[in-house]
Image (cartoon, rainbow, N blue to C red; front, side):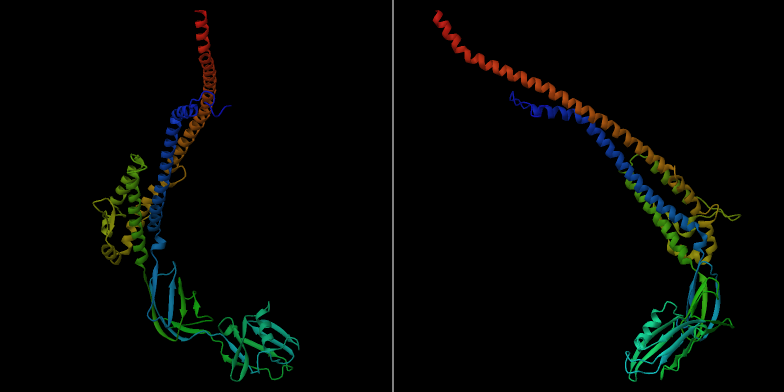
Length: 437
């Protein structure tokens, strides 16, 4: 196929073909523009889903009573103990008096010139909590450093760490129990062949001992979670202090604040999309209106009088956003945490559950968003098919135009040749006429 039409005739046929193809391509350009609009709409739906998901998570959070009804632990003196509650803790108070802190057992050896000094030959056994490490020291493995390494690297180490300290008297081997408490005391058996090698106690093995509301408690460790339900205690020093477990309204307040922030974030997305990619989309109007109705409506718990979220400091501003009066919320929490929980997390009527259930209509599989995205995907597929058919037709049109213009090019070239020949013959015809006259 000739791809440089016009060579024979001199006409700018390539530009003629290009111009005609541009006109023929106009429908494809319109389809591409339509496809781009659909892609922008799909992206906008994805953005809206993200904002709705955040609000749904916030609604689920304020609807989860178990995570909102926690307690906080307050120690009157952290130098005596610290405390950390979990979801099983309940509000109560305790008096704690610590008399003894748990301690690891520690032994030290006699002094040697340095860590490379041999300590003799023979057996050296170390036992902790009924488990024994048997070392057989020979001339090839009996320096202070080698004994330390053999203990630390033993696969059946019973729970002891060896180290070497260098003091004025010389180098000493130190054995420290890995765990505190009497049950983890270190005992040793030293072969007489280890002449001069002996161990003395640096720190005794001790159990923690304290009283809880006057009751004696002992533990092998200073940290434990099996004395007070739902509370992990860490003893830090000898003395007395009080433990107060109080309702933690901070968690509840933070969850409510996140709910308000999430609603306003969603509404900001709705406003932007209404002016842009989803202008005129009824989904936005229905979503915003229903949310506003749910948040504004009364909440009736049992036989109590109807209540409103405005009593918690949650109300709509003139611009449609939610505002949170933290002072009013704190007052409500201090006055009656139970009522606040009922309003936001009651199983049947609390605002958290109602908003969650409503938004699930949008977020669930085959929900409103899924259906809308599937519709847009189908529209994209149809446009792609139309573009493919139009592109195929354009190829055929280009082939036809090139055939036609090639024929025209050849015809014009022949006509130009004939014209040139006739022009050349005109003088001869004139001479013949003159001779005849």
